Image 1: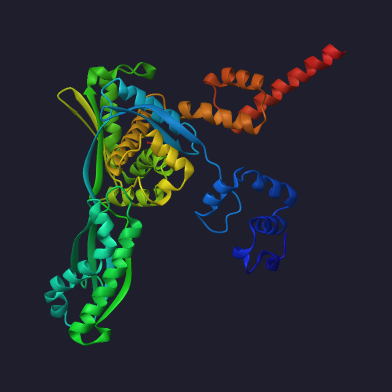
Image 2: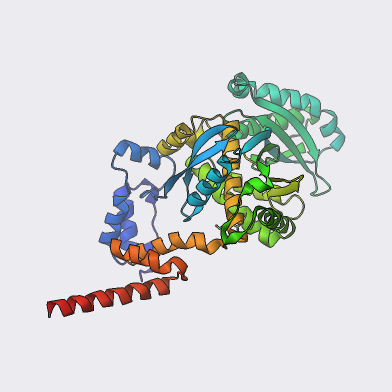
Length: 450
Ligand code: MEV
C-alpha cells in the first residue's frame, strides 16, 4: 500500500497527459508499466481526433471504450431506420432489433410530438413589500425580454426563443422565496447554454429593476439561475398496435390471446407497484439511453427527467397498454429534451455519424426515434418475462462473456454453446465445463504421445 501523502498532488491538471498517467500508474497500481501501456493503448491513433476527445473533459488520461451497435429494421412513422446504440449491457441491442423486426411486420412504430417546451428558473428571495414585486412584474418582464434580445436573436431567427416568464410566489414553502419560471423553444438544439445564458441575464435585469424601483439594494437576493431538466411539456408519445390475432404465437406455445392478456397484466403491475416500475422503466432507459449516448445527447438529463415524470403521483410505469375491440395497443409517453445541433452532437465524431446514420433527423424526429427504441426495448423485455423468462435471452451473451474471460478457444465456444443450450450458465458451471474438457483433451494428447 502506498503512503497517503504519495496519493496527493498539486498542479495535476497542468501536467502533460503522459506524466499524469505515469504518476497515477506509479502511485495507485502494483504493475505501473503494464498500466501505462494499457491506458496509452486506448488513445486514438490520430492525434487530431484525440485532441477533440480530450476537449470534452478535464484531466483526461485515456479513452473509455464502449460497444457501439446498431438495431436495424426500425419502422418509425413509415420510415425505416437503423438505430445506433451505445450500451455495455449484453442483449440490449439484440432485444431492440428483435422487437423492431416484430413490429415492422405489424405496421411499425408511430410517434407524436406532444410539446417541445423547455424550462428554466431564477430562484430569488424578496425582502420588500410583496405588492411591489407583483404589481411591477409585467414591466420587469418586458425589460428582461428586451435585455436578452441580442442573446435570443439567433434562436428567434430559427423559429424559437423565449416563450414566457412567470412569477411564482413560493413563500408558503420557504420564507421570502419567489421564482421566475421561464419557458423556451430551442428548436433543434437541446438549448442548455442558451437557456442558462438567458436566465443569468434575467437575474441581472431583475435585480437592477427592483433595486431602482424600491431604491433599496437589499430588496432582492438572487440565489441561482439554472435550467430545469424537468421538461414535462417537451414530450413525445410512441406506440404500436395491431389486432390481437396478428400478434402470432410465442415461445412456450403461448397463443396471441394469452400473450396480450398477460402483457397487459405485466404493464398494470408496473403501473401499480413502484418496485416493479423502477425495473420496468430501467428497461425502457436501456433503449433510450443507448440512443441518447450514441447521438451525443445528455443521458443524465433525459433519465432524471423521465423518472420525475414517472413520479407525478406515485412512481409508476412510463409505458401503458390497452386491449380494446380486439386491438392490442402499447405506448410510451416520455419527456425527451434532445438536440441534433450544437453540443457534442456536432463535435463527437461518432455522434455525428450516428445522426448521419439516422439521416440527419431534426430534434422532433430524434425524439420519436428515441421513444420508439425505448418502447421496443420495453416490449422485448416484457415479452421475454411473460414467456420464457429473461435469463434465456441473457444467457447466451453471458456465456460468451464468461468464455471470453476464461480464454476459450473457438472449438470450446462451439462445444459450450451446445452444452449450455438447456443448462444453467454461471461462472462456476462454465469454468467446470471448460476444465473437464481441457482435462479430457490433455489426457487424450498424453495417450496419443505415449
Ligand atoms: C434489464 O436490464 C432490464 C429488465 O430487467 C427490464 C424489465 O424487467 O422490464 C429486463
